[in-house]
Length: 452
Ligand code: SF4
Ligand code: SF4
Image (cartoon, rainbow, N blue to C red; front, side, top):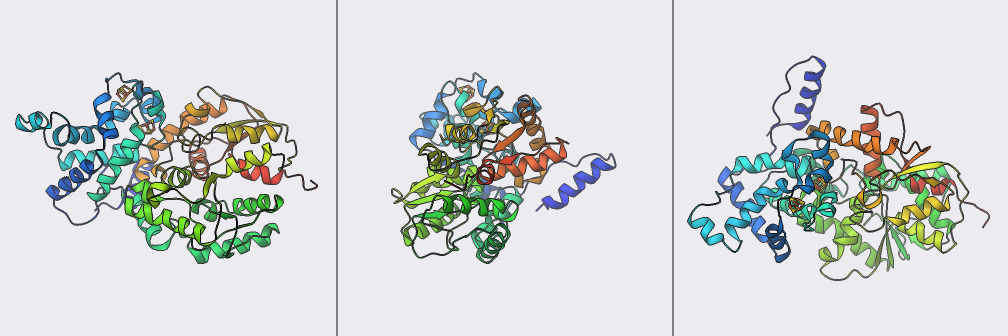
């Protein structure tokens, strides 16, 4: 197996010394023959062929509109990044194995069997160059949900042991230790106590009963821990019954991102079981786009029935509190551009929530072209930020994003996703952006009017 970390280092060195860049190689997991890998992939593609996926497969009119919706195609001009092309082996497998003319396709060999080489080449297309942002889905005149099909394709790739190594490794770590970035329960607890001291705010953990179970993302716990203190500050300000809990706190779901449904279920189940145990009425999700997608839109499917609590993203929660007049905020009085996290706005439907908060802060929102539901993705979601060999592609996508943000000439750059924030920090440094993106939650917590 190629070690991606070594490959990345070689790549960096090559650039430094003007050496030729080595070919991108592909990662594999498990000992399997090529034939077995293909068989496993095909079996799992076939498993996902429900009527919805079949309808999508049959509906494409090959107009190519989706290409110009994808940040990876637009910034590279490379036709292989055309969204519908990313699901081509899935499509071929469907036509040959499950479509209405499958018999003829097989009889006359009109569609050749998918090969392991095609699957290997495909790894880059469905992992490195798709954030499952859904912009192509919104642009498609036939409403083909390419982002969901990519998600389904990842299930098959996982079973075939064809996942980019870093993404697979963090998913395994999350499954085994409870967090992809080492924020295990002990670390989580220690960081809560640290933030409690540092910010002089009461932070509750492992309460036996509470109305709100508060979850965090590992990026926040490890890289932006102030957001934990700020969440506590807001909840205390509102006088609510809430708790963090060491049995269910990690909101990110690398089972979902890597394509392993069993792990996805395990990760969701921890939060669901904890919420039920403490009789929570609400699970409050942090500034993390994929966490919202995993619990808000996949949670009930993982549980097998309706969730006995509501699931709310922190921006929805803050917007509700503002609307109800419970959250009094100081007027910040500047201009801001807001980066919509794809999984919260376009894919999640909570596009207006951050706008209400920004208005309540007395900030003039400057919307660039293609904002809101048609916002450009930052290029780091869907697990892409974990894949080192995708760095150059991610930076290219970020160039487009930064141009969009800069076009507003706003004072503040805001977002409500810690993964996007991390991507802005990393890419912004690489591209010498000279600006910082800020958390909307942190801005709210810093501007609470204490004397209600
Ligand atoms: S979901 Fe986003 S990243 Fe993936 S193909 Fe569509 S536009 Fe591109
Ligand atoms: S926009 Fe839709 S119909 Fe057109 S090529 Fe893309 S997936 Fe097919």
